[in-house]
Amino acid sequence: MKRFLLVSIIFLTMLLTPYLVMAQQANIAYVDIGKVVMESEKGKQAKKTMDDEINKIRKDLSSKQEELQKLKDSLDKQGAAVKPEKREEQQKLYNKKLKDYQNLENEYQGDMQQKIAEFEQNLVNEVMDVIKKIGEREKYTLILQKHPAILLYAAPGIDITNKVIEEYNKQSKEKATKK
Image (cartoon, rainbow, N blue to C red; front, side):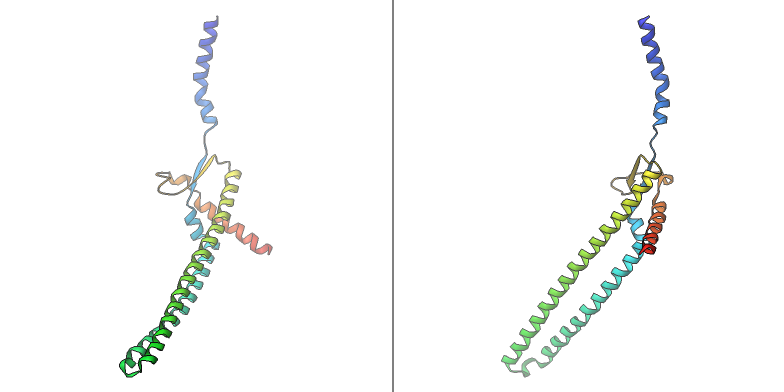
């Protein structure tokens, strides 16, 4: 009797296991966060803002570089015709302006890198919130980030990137109208 009961339990377990596994089937998706950031309305707007700032900085640096070039050309033209004291004074002025230009260029570059990093981080945080909402709403078990080193293959049918872009654009518009 005990043997029959044991065999019955094993048989039922083997019979029901596939159904239990199917009942707990994972709902998995992936998102290309970089694409969301680059193709969303807010991402495009951020890129335009950053491009405008970079162009402004380039113009400023270009004008300072032209000023330096004129000063250098002036030094070269005067050559030996100028007294050594005056030439040395002009060379010191040129060297000081060159150093100021290099410092300004480094400062601009550091500032822009910091601004870009902060803005990208804010965008990514907002996108992560949208992904979390979609995951909870649509009962995903797992949502992965599309990255060649992590996600070697995935069927295109589980890519929810466009859904995230739409939701993020919608959320951004709602926040903008509330302000």
